[in-house]
Image (cartoon, rainbow, N blue to C red; front, side):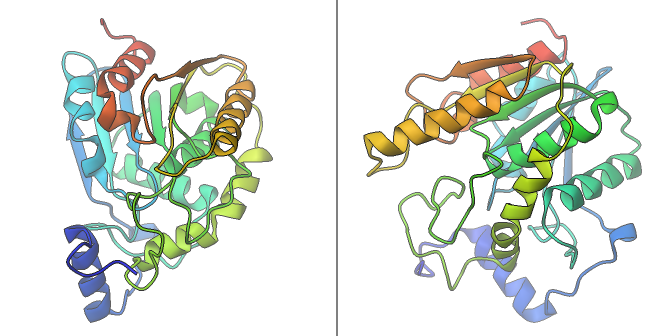
Length: 265
């Protein structure tokens, strides 16, 4: 388990809140999220975080994408710090539905440029495939594959890169997203193909400490399969980058999002 002294502050705050509140859920029709908006423009760039991450993971790239370019929105999914809880499944269909409801509540109309990292990339794939009329572009940042089942020891989709046993202090929402990741992947794989959506797939070139050549080959193959499933995809392998490309090479993510938003370099 993670010792309390090493646990992220947001995790501890979330765990304490849930302990006190009993994780009472908000009905879907009145669910509210913690949202951060920056910039303005004819298109809106939606930033979807991975498992265990909050909107803070976009703090470097969001203002750079927004500047003289587009409106940008980052947010925390239901159950994460500052957002309402939900008893609904944590699968692609539900999470995308909640996001679209929030966009309507914020009066943010399409077209959208969807940017998804890790498990968030899986959710954005579902969005693009099922609502192509609302989507002008898709950026996948080391996205989860639709057959990439997550488990409690999976480090490639969490911020706990050096800790294997994220168990006792893992927030309930992460556990639910992990348990529903199989259905989330199935929902993506059975969705219509996004034939006409310009797509940029950004892939890492190294994994966590201890990664074997076989692990790296598998990760590369899964990213190739993701790119192949999007006819308009441009697959970019980001040199010397781990899973968090938006942190290690933010300029690559910024360039991809701005390009699909039709902004000047």
